[in-house]
Amino acid sequence: MELKNMVTIVSRTGRHLQRYNFHGHRQVVGCIPYRYKSVNGRSVVDEDAIEVLVISSQRKGKGMLFPKGGWEKDESIKEAALRETVEEAGVLGDVESELGKWSFQSNNGNCYEGRMFPLLVKEQLELWPEKDVRQRVWISVREARKVCHYWWMKEALELLVNRLTSQGQVVVETKKESCSSREGSLTRSSKILKVY
Image 1 (cartoon, rainbow, N blue to C red):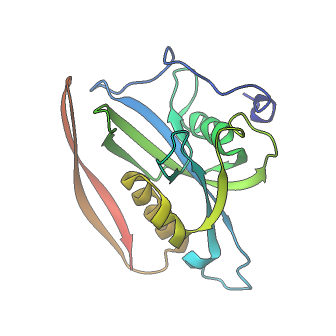
Image 2: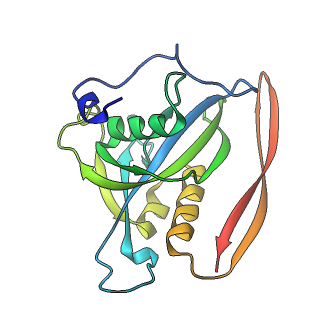
């Protein structure tokens, strides 16, 4: 799939190709688009040298977030993450290794399984499918922590920052997550890396 050509078409819609996990929860994937500000010859990157791209929600009052959407049956997980990022934020780049997997529940009670990837931005497009319905803004990591609407995306951001700046001691913490729906309930433990 050539994504540069795809930006001339509209975003995918519908759920007929949507993936669901074995609990019946919709699988969504997304990226945290990032770039480096000038590091002025420093060998260690700190979070002040990183900018991330956030987008506005299509629904008013839902704040800012990172691009994400449904993972469909005709694409790999990384292709889906890149497609959603191109459709919603209009950027291209290198999709890196997965940051993690989260279970979360929407305000209407639907359960989801979300996965996030870093995307080192190589190109910012002037035209993209959701240009007329979303704003995009490059901001600092510190600001992203304040404005990002979703807790699980904030956790993904922390994992990204730790990965990009890791020079210290790594501590693994276990976190329990649960999600309940009509189809049943899911509780899982996840490992979170913290760098000090």
